[in-house]
Structures are given as C-alpha cells and as structure tokens.
Length: 241
Image (cartoon, rainbow, N blue to C red):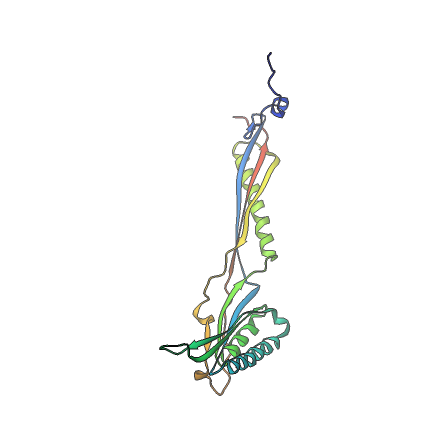
C-alpha cells in the first residue's frame, strides 16, 4: 500500500520567499541614532561610620550620625527624588595575639540619594562630606528610564532607516511600495562612568573638620549618550534595469 505524502501549509501556499520577488523586490536597511543630552538625575552614595570601645557606643554614634545625615538630605525637599538606606553593619575588631579579645567596634551604614537639582547637589555633597566619619561617592549622572531622549533617539533611527531605503530605491530609479518589517535591536543610554571624576568624589573625617562651613562644590553635569538602532525591510516597485 502506498501512503501519499503529507500536505503542509507550504504546499498549499507555495514556498516562502524571504528575499522578495521580481515583482516586489525587498530592501533591508538599518537606521541608527546617536544623541548627546544633559543628565536628568544625579546619584550620590553616602557612607557613615562610627567607632567605639563597646558595641553600644558604636551603635549610638552611628544612629546619631545616620539621623543627622538623613535630616540634612531631607531639608532639600523636592530636589531629592529618591532617598534609600542600604547595608548596615556593626563589626568587632579583634586585638592581635592569642584569644578573641575585642579591641573596638566599627559601625557602617550606606545611604543613596538621587537629586534632580544640580545646584543643590553641589551644596549637599559638600555639607555631607564636611561631617565626621562620612564618605561621599559620586555623583553618577543618568537619564530616567522613561526619558524623552530615548523616544527621540528611536524615532530618529526609524526616520534614518526610511531615508536610507528611499535613497537605495532612488538609485534604482524606483520608489518604495510598503514596509514589511521593523525590528528594534536596542535603544539605551550609555551607562554613566564609574567611578566619578575626582572632583565628584569626597571623603571627610573628624581629623580634618574645620570650624567654618566649606564652600559648595562646583559640579559640572556629565552629558549622556543615547543610542538607538532599528532594522527595517521594505518592498519597492520593480526597477527597470
């Protein structure tokens, strides 16, 4: 008995033609966009430390300094878009030699703040860095995930793809007929440089505290690069070759 071959959808509709046909030639192009824009937010990381002969002293000092730092940051109101407390630790320091005799306790807590007012940023970082046993790292400049700059870059990449396809069609003395496919292959901002420039990285300790307030640090925002790419495929009217 002979079993007839199975019929597939390709048999019913004919084989797929991924590269177009003589009656509907395809053009595949890539569109790219590169923008450079001002940052929208700046992030700083504050590390507060304490040291005491006993655990309670280290903890009390750390709590006091942490509260003072949080209160200071909160005085800047709407300039601070986000404020978060990260890792916290109280660590015993053992004396050298035999046994497990504790010499002192070290406390540490990390705070992260995001600001949108860069004038306030310079003043805040200086005031934080001018306090005892406080370290300030940053700033790290960035765009928001929903920044209009990302949309502008994607739209510009699409327009470039259409323009490039038109130029190819014009070279063949024909015109585009229809868009077949548009694929987003990535649109993202270049990550901010880590660590920040030396002028944006500060450390303050009690031994260097001064009686007068330090002048606000002048911080120059780092421009952000936004990149977008798309792949596009079009059909065009048959050219006369």
